[in-house]
Amino acid sequence: MIIRQLYKKLPRTLQNRVSYLNTLAGFKPRVRPDNVSAERKFPDGFKGGVIFTGDFELAWAIAHSKLKADPEAVAGRERENMPKILSLLDQYQIPITWATVGHLLLQSCKKGDHDWMKRLPHLDDHFQHLSGDWFDVDPYSSWDKAKSWYAPDIVQSILDSSVRHEIGCHTFSHVDCRDEFCPAAVLDDELTACEQAAKPWGIEFKSLAFPAGTAGNFAVLKKHGIKIYRRRVSVFELAYPFRDEQGILVSPTGFGLGFLYQRRPLSDNIKRYHLAIDKAIKTNTISHFWFHPSADPEVFTGLLPGILEYCTRKRDEGLLWVATMDSVQSFINENKVL
Image (cartoon, rainbow, N blue to C red):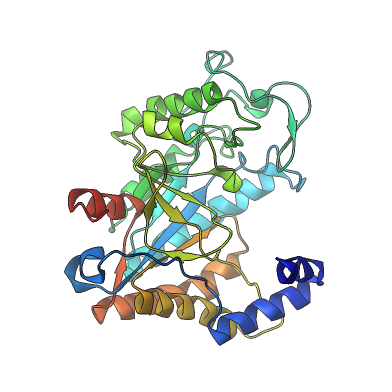
């Protein structure tokens, strides 16, 4: 605890340096121990696993963020990056979970369409929502006129990919899900709205990634048939999924995709993820990587290809299972692994 407090007081550049050395030394990523037989954990004799989730949000994530970035600019960058990302995933035949804000599934909406939904109260924590209505940012328009807030065209391109991706849930309007900020009835309506938006697509949500890691209201997830969710667990980054008090599977958030070591070569940044994959194989666990498609384009032209190539190599060697969140929960539940 004392070491962690001292670490937080270091300048960002020194924190990155310490993190890099900890990874090289094998101290990170940290592993959650379990007593599940290694032979039962994975299909086809694989020794470890990787899950990728892309938090597909466009303007919704930044609309109530304290980062004060321009939602339209963030959404525009995400739209520019998506074809490149999907092309890479096709090239390496890597399936991922797209944790999708439900509103993006809509072709259009009009004023009053969401009035039935209970609203998130005003809050000032990770998100800042101090006045008005959470949906005041909604343009109540259509995807061809407001491409930052609707994305049926991108959803279709995901479904048309040569590899079978999963469309997962990221709530309907990117709300804070923590119990202290979000009444259960609010998340209940958010997930109902997601289900309604997904129905025309033939999509049934089985996984969820909490917006900005704001995990909570787990009983609501169970009510809506969520079988697995991603959330941060402060004491480890590598784990085989485990069950929470509701019996839902938890896949802990691992390394996010980004240039943590800004002053080091690209190869050093890529090595961090290779080491996490190697450790997952060695410890028979799963490394859950995640990213925002709105990240700097260099993440997807330099970093991601280096990670995908390594995943493909280890998969071809029979060591690494690369799967979506839904595939993982299906294997565990159908085979009664846990």
